[in-house]
Length: 156
Image (cartoon, one colour):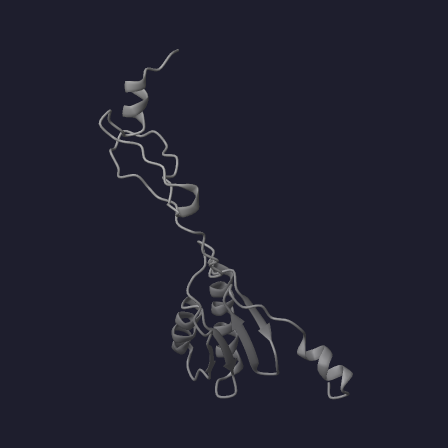
């Protein structure tokens, strides 16, 4: 298929009236060149390449802004206090629970409720002492086992 000069001029956005001027080699100037445009139906101004910048601030698309993670220390006194602990977990905060001021039956019910909560948010619950539990949401990782550490030190 043969293209005429007129068709090529229209394709590159030039008319027959445009004059072509080339500067002498001794006076070279760096001119931005248009990037090859992909054919589309919308009329856009030509895009120009800029000099490449060395930008080291690349952020993944799925990253959330980094905020300081919080750990809430919580000491329930009645079963209905569990709602506050669950709310902290749902807001991506870890919760340390101390059951020193509540009877064992109520503490068991609270642990059962929070076990369901951390399961729903892909979190974890860990016993870290006699009456102390650590509940973490999915963005936390628990490493180590307190019982093993205490046994090694001769305290457990």
